[in-house]
Length: 199
Image (cartoon, rainbow, N blue to C red; front, side, top):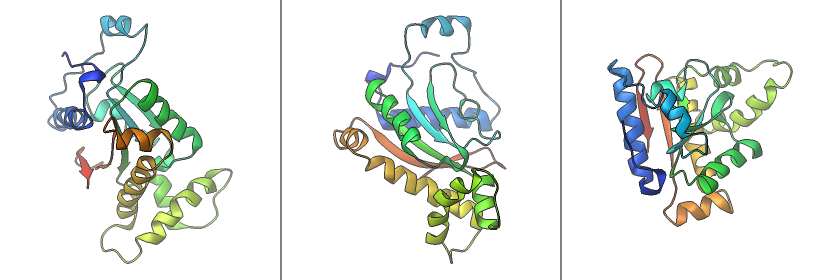
């Protein structure tokens, strides 16, 4: 399956490509593109991913699988709760500014364990409290909403992190203003396998 290089892709085109792959995944019609030895050889001299996925480290949400993509297609940054810190931000900046990737998707998901632990409260061991500290302000901001508290928080978190990325100076905010980068929030449903782009 041939696609244009990232120079010819817009953020909207990249979203379309991701969502088409997710439909294939859900309908069990995956094409498993770009997974042959020829593709590996093509990538020896460099990469041109068409999307950055800031996703959760949850083993049930592998972006290359749920979007039916292959080698070199996605620049994936995964951390529990898909939260942002300077290291995550630097990774996204590298892809957007050096690899000219036109899209960053912040991908939350249902039944997120990091968010569930934050909702449950109580004592957390080791460095796990750092995840809860990052998520707790989001949880506080949606108190009183109807529906599942964990999933509502996951959606709100994806939206808030995407806004933080859009406004991050100097690199990402400039790329967004210039029209060279689109940042969106999305939500993956473990039950259905569907990805929803959040507005």
